[in-house]
Length: 156
Image (cartoon, rainbow, N blue to C red; front, side, top):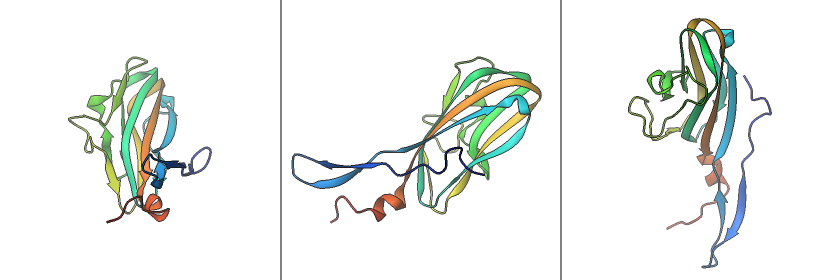
């Protein structure tokens, strides 16, 4: 399992505020994925999140409507398929439909999730006779331990 372009790099920039406190300003990292559903039902493990990762938001949308008997997609972890997006939040019948973990009443982690030891992100696809369909997703996350390794902004 690997990313198409390899592991994303940490992005940060130096900033100086009006109080002359120099610090590193971190932005969330983002992973984009796309999955053709015509391959049928599967558990697709697409990313090994490193230890100390906080997944802030998962957003998915339908690019091409799914065709088949009862097609569903969940986005989560290999131990909890609906950690971020549950099938009841994500209707695959129409292009443009979307779902996110933020505010979900059925996703296990509607406010994000910290992975102290890392974990594997998984897309679970179910249904029979899947002949068409495509979904994309964006995962916004922070590698918290890496951020602290680069220096603490304010310490008391």
